[in-house]
Image (cartoon, rainbow, N blue to C red; front, side, top):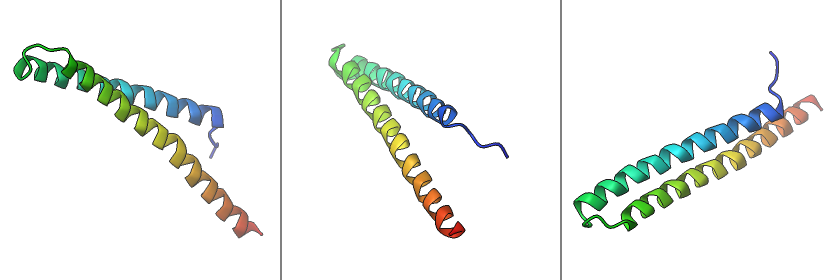
Length: 85
């Protein structure tokens, strides 16, 4: 089995982060727009709050994806090195 290059894995993480953040921001825009129309008499702050919350959630997920996957990979490499010694 051919192993993935680190550049390809990084590119997939970046693509996943961009798509996830975009989806969460669009959802925040829609939810904020609905709340703005229904509850807050067409104010703009619910829309900005929804988009900002979506961006924050997407950024947090991306940051977690970049940090945790690398830590798991390092642990797996350490185990492999210990098994071969």
